[in-house]
Image (cartoon, rainbow, N blue to C red):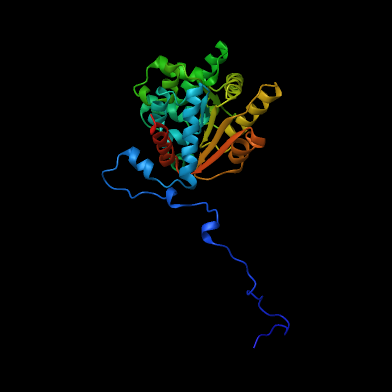
Length: 319
């Protein structure tokens, strides 16, 4: 016997109304299902066989808008953090650059460090736990000297930090230049902007560091990026890949600068790629700039070493 009040009875289901399943609109149908994968599938067949659902549909939408941007001759800006370099993706981006699917790169300071080390040594990403206790973390002489000298020379020549480092690396003809985003962009005359926060990168505590030069060159790059964002109107694309704080803040400020100057900025695409969807990328890249119908914002959650090659393959699937 129930311990509840006598007048508390389970609700009567006799009057429930139903409908025919055939009359209902559904989000998923057999047309969206995956096809079986076998060992003889080509890459194109593999991509076509994926289910047209959730992240796959999102990836296809981003790729379609990147292809559209190239057709419309609008900027396709890849905003990247150092993890993109550390996961070995530079060759993928360099190939897309050569095909016209990367028309500008915006980087945080760690990209400069890791890309420079790849170019000159063919390796990067030190063991922080093993070196921090002795105060040796980040003290590689060549890295600090090349980047800080480049910033100082860039300030003297009134150019941006990304261009200055690309020029410096290219001039020394590093042995692994073909794997360097900085060298490849510089040689292809593709804009490469670098956005640093003083104190965030290992080169900032080297004796060769000059805050005024870093500030001047990175501010020039902010203005260059803002001009590229202005040109995104009518079909451009901005991708944020692996930067959780600096680049989302930079991009949002570039958007507001463009609109403050009364330039139109609509019909563009943004996307955030990361293994965690953090607040700033989702808010400052995906949602706020594209709100009120101004554009389309997407997010893809996953590891870069998987999602970026998949994106590249999907971009090229219709070539």
